[in-house]
Amino acid sequence: MFIDRLTNKLQIDENWQVDYRQALKENYEVSGHKKDVIVLHYTDTVLTSSVVAGFTKKVTKTSAHFLVERDGHIIQFLPANQVAFHAGNWPMNLRSIGVELANVGVSKFGKYVPECDTMRAKYPRTNTVSAWEKFRDPQLEGLVQLLNALVDFYPISTIIGHNQVPKLGRIDPGPAFPWSLILEEVQKKRPIEHTYPKS
Ligand SMILES: [Zn+2]
Image (cartoon, rainbow, N blue to C red; front, side, top):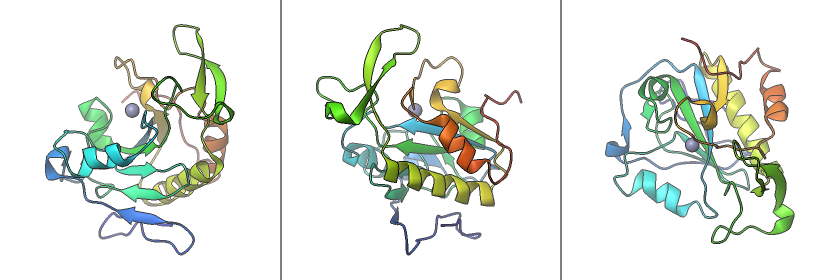
C-alpha cells in the first residue's frame, strides 16, 4: 500500500481492499497543504453507509480523507494533501489527514453491538464505566498499513486522537483504542509524537 506521487491517492493493493469515493466539493477544500499530523476518529455508528453518504452525496461540510471499516477495507474520499473538514479546528484541518474508524464508541440503546465485541472502560471526565466497542484485528491491521503508507509519503511527525484537539470536548477514538500497539507499529519507521503540537 502506498500513496501515488501525482494524485495523492492510496494505491490499490493486491493484498488489501482500497476504494476511492470522491467527496462532494462542498465538503472539503481542494487546495494542497503540507501534512504533518494525522487525527484519528471513530464514526459513532454501526453502519458506515450514512458516513459515506454524508461525505459523498449530501452537503454536510464534513469529510475525512479515509475510512477504515471493521473488516479492514479502506475508502479514500479526497486526495490526502487536500483539506478535509474533520478536526473542528481550521489550522488543524489544514495540516492534518483525518482517518475515521468504523466504531460506535459507547455501545448503548440504538447503537447496539454484541456484548462480546465490547470492553468496559471509564467514560472520559465522568468516571462512569461504559461498554465500548472493541476495535477489530483486521481493522487495526488495515489502519497500520494506511498509517505506514502515509508516514512513508508525508512528513508526519504527530498522530493524535480527535479528543486531543483542545476545546472541542470530543472523546473519539475513545478508551478502547489501542494507542500503544498502533504507535509502536508506526514508530518502527521513525519517532512519532502523540501530543497536540505546540506550533
Ligand atoms: Zn472525530
